[in-house]
Image (cartoon, rainbow, N blue to C red):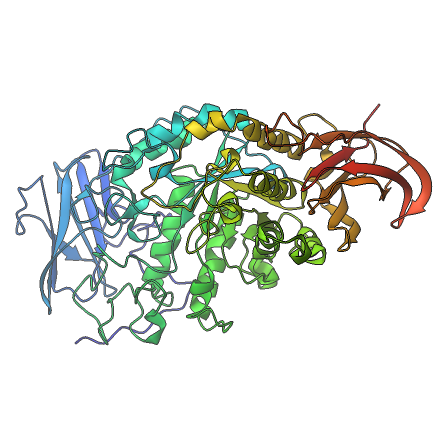
Length: 625
């Protein structure tokens, strides 16, 4: 077999000059820049990378799938092939036919922007789209509230159909999300995957949008509608592995070593991942460019406002053993994040690394990976443990306090915090209500302690996120075949209101809780004997800014419980999670406003007595005026 060409320096671009629109002319004067199918006024140009192919042609509906009709010319020694096909047009289906030492291969274009399905044909995609919008200005990151959803199950309007929900069906629930108050939708992966139902973490074609969800135009319609309704959009992308099934990238041009996947994949021990031997070769410039181009496509062509990158730990290392043995993966992440920050500074890139490393969110210039934020397992695990534990004696307030105060690089918003996510409610784990009382969302303990966790998500420092259906006590665990039960939205409308009130507080909609968008936090009380914590949040401090949060992790109420306050005077109770209006199960324990008296307590200059119900959270603010 042909030996693998030596890797080029990471900064080099192996495409024909201008192939990715770098502003230079191609060596072939008529060649058009770009990869894959490139539609233009007189036809469609095609470019593909296949360094070990002996010949390449493009077949499709425009030439009756005739492999001899439109051969591609080899452009350069790096193995790029190109042809311009007059008369081909948007909507045409096509494939590449490759003559290789391994035989003749028919392959879907790796850069295909649209496919009929994961094992079907590529489709010439129309890049033109009427966004019909003025520039959508996202809020600053400290004012984001993220709602994570799965397109196939979020609003499956015909659960008896074999087909999943679609982008259009999600849009039809935007009114619910608007009333809830969230301002950012995080979409689980939508790159074309095997079959019609999946979590999406098995991408077969990373440039194409899942056809069962509606395809690329429907996704653009979804994003346009989201922006018009005031939602930013974060897209989940998967670069730590491809496939492993329905993978036309596998041995794309017939070459491979050691039974590996060929030009797009590592051929040695570095190919191993928990999802198959399909780790991309981050050392090949062409593969690096492939992944970089994909990340930029979502931002520039689809107008997404952020990217959440799945399991970056397996991009920077082969195994989750703490050994950063893939430096090419690290520099790829730096390249993508550095370019994103330079060209699209308001775009939030989020790492799912879960190793609580400051280096993930350090700037590239300081040697970091350059992410804007990262999912924080230092928050979710202690909080879930504290509310799921059956016995009050097994709750650690010290662990809760550490979860509240943890941060990266002294920046509170370099972390995304949550009590439920697609990972935390699957893979052997379930929704909090189900962990506490399996199959019984009306259970008092389940309702009280799940909302206790939620209240900390919205009051602790970080970018808060909730998972679809959490706001109406969706139970059991997440499956891509089980749609949300929207009847629960009405059955638990009080709990929905509780979440809505928390979002309003977090975003300072009432003008009294600016501190919840601020950097600062101070633990006032960490009391394991009584299972309570109290903490202060603030941006600049003072009336309209300072917030005090008091949480009781015990089944016993606390009466006349004295805690410190940042200032003497009136502190208004803005939220009581035990309010009977939230649930018929709640006791409505009579908590109220507090008048703090001068006198040092808990290291603060004033103190006051607080009443709090079981498993409850109170939020006080020093009211302006």
